[in-house]
Structures are given as C-alpha cells and as structure tokens.
Image (cartoon, rainbow, N blue to C red; front, side, top):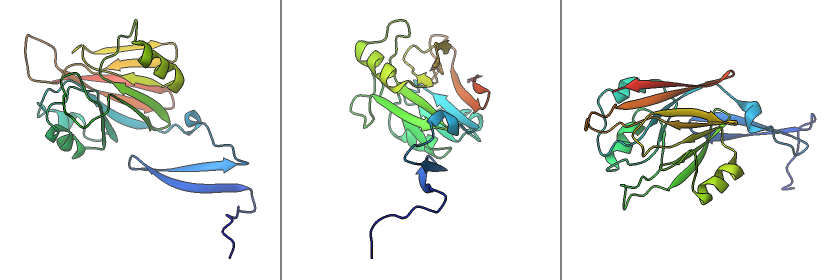
Length: 195
C-alpha cells in the first residue's frame, strides 16, 4: 500500500484545521495557499486589558456573542482568564504586574482572516526596537496593547493600534472600558464599552 497522498482529479487538496472554534478550510492549488487576507470572515472579538485581578460583572454581558477574547496584560490571578473562557476562547499576554504568570509577553493570532499582535507595553510613536522589528516582520492588521489605562484607536499605515483601556477596579477617577472589534468585509470597527 502506497503512503503517497493522492490529489483529487481537479488538482485541489483540502484539509480542515481547527482554529479558535472555527473550522477553516485551507485550499491548495499547485502548492499555493490562499492569502490570509483573502479568507476574511465576519467576526466579533472582545478586547480587555489591565483587569488587575478584577472582572467587572458587566463584562460577560458586553462580551456575549464574541467569538474570541484578547487580554492585553496586567491580568491578575489566572482565575480571571478562566472566567473569561466561560464566554469565549481567550488569548492573553503577560503585563508588567503579572510576575510569575504563565503567559507569554507577546502573542500572534489569526482570527477571521486577520492577524493580531498582542503585547502589553507599546509606545505607538516609538516602539522598542525588538517590538518594532516583530511588527515589521509579522505585518499585523491590529496591534493590541494595554498598560496606559487609556482607550486608544489609531491606524498607522495599514495597521490598527488598539488599546481597550482600563478594566480594573475604580480608582483615581480613571475611565473604565472594554471594547469589541467588529471585523467584516468593510474592515475593523472598534466599539468601546464603558464599565
């Protein structure tokens, strides 16, 4: 019996890959995979940061119906991520106050045919050299960050730089927000939600 894979008569081969609760069909024609951008699908993504061990009771209602949640660091204890995972799959990064946490400093994830780079501290005007090189190499559609405790949404060239704001306990009169990114064929539309 030959172990060689056979291609269908039309020359296309298909394989299914489970990706963040979405079955994505990757088609290959003569060894050329379709580009990520040609496979864009409508999707709602919840974005949260700087929870500092506090999950506001409004968050589950705000994130109802999202297909994925991105947490941009300063999480607090890991129980918070488990609570968010009851809503949708979560990709989280470590913030500067998450010492000893089992999260990476940076994550790259593809959702709905778009690439997201998540990193806690991003100086939009002058990113650290290593981060700048990674942004150039990865060419993400969105860079998600936290740390400043201030909502931010600005497109620089083709990349959206996005901070959902501060979601921890009330302090110093800081505005408290989370966000939803509505991704569809027309682009990415941010929606901030006040806590």
